[in-house]
Image 1 (cartoon, rainbow, N blue to C red):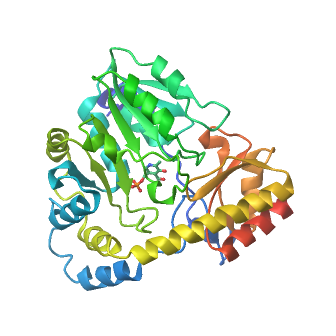
Image 2: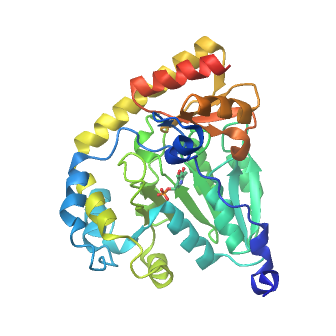
Length: 364
Ligand SMILES: Cc1ncc(COP(=O)(O)O)c(C=O)c1O
């Protein structure tokens, strides 16, 4: 069979997502046991012990399908965020919710706006829907250029992605810029706030976008259990949106899109504020540890409100990435992220951060 004739032609234009290199792969390929992965902005401190206990308790029941409606998780998120539970949609990570949104809203000739560089799944999911990509270069290397992004809005624009904090730069779009965006964006455009790193943001100028939702604006807010809650391996994220749009998500999603263990772990994680606090504090300290080291090494970095830092090593990132791998440290080379001389490194605990810093000094 000619697969080229079978498959929709536009899908061949998609470059597959390149994930962070898995620990086991480095162990296998390089024969190194003690591998440190700082490549995928995971929470390396780990999940809440309460979540681990909930997973254990639920493990023997996985012969049953999960609750496809995620009733308890939606109720809990609704109470926590002060929004109706019918406005909460849970998915197998934000990744799945982005895909559902794109295939539900976009078709050929529809336009979607996002920053460049930003989270690559906006591009991939919009390409699956064969939409027209409008990527707007960041200003001063690291920052969403809201006026320039607004200039690109047309009658055909349907989705406007704002990644806040932004991946891979870690920078935020501040309140005033979000206010500007919300005052200018035409009614036919849905503003999508991707707040995967929401809990890590510490800048007092970080906007509380839930207020726009609560005041009836057409926005979608995505958050996740993969980052601060440390449940990336289970896949759970959620979106806050109008009930009408949530109804569309329920039509399009798979019936059991969030597995049982993810649901019980997420519920338990929401009960452990202490753990979240510990993770956020360790992360803030870790960012400072990185900044101090990069300052001492004379390396420029983007100020981060997330759990990773993008640093300019002023050398080919692929070469330094490979040299770090040989020392058992996995980071993300900037080549795939729009920064050929950048490394994106996830923040970990003090000891792990120090190991990365020492390795970086050696390889540079
Ligand atoms: C900005 C951003 N959005 C979404 C995701 C995906 O999140 P999830 O694990 O919930 O699919 C990531 C993952 O790195 C991310 O950086």
